Image (cartoon, rainbow, N blue to C red):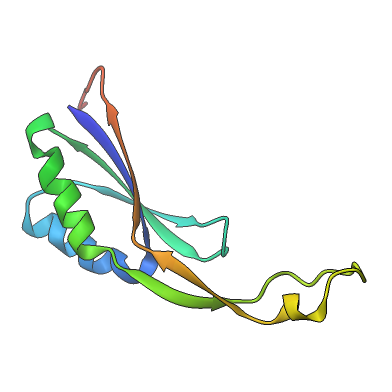
Length: 109
C-alpha cells in the first residue's frame, strides 16, 4: 500500500476530484496555500494499493496543467535595487507536486 500526497492548483482540483470518483479512487481533499505565490492549492491524500499507483499518477498528470501567470515581486525599500524589480514577471505555475510514500500499516475503524 502507498500514500500519495498530490498538491495541485485550485483551478484543477474539481476536475481531478471528479476523475478520482469516476475511477473509484478514494481521496481526502484539503485546501492549502502555496508558499511561492501565496495562492490557493488543493492537496489530495490518497491511500492506494501498490498496483494502482501508476493509474493514480497518470490521472493526476493528465488533469493538472502548467500555466503562465504574472506576479509582482515584493517591493524593496532598498535604494540599491533598481525600479525594474517592481514590474510584474511571468512565472510558470500549476502542474502537480506528488509524493508517494510507503505505508507500513493501514487500519480502518
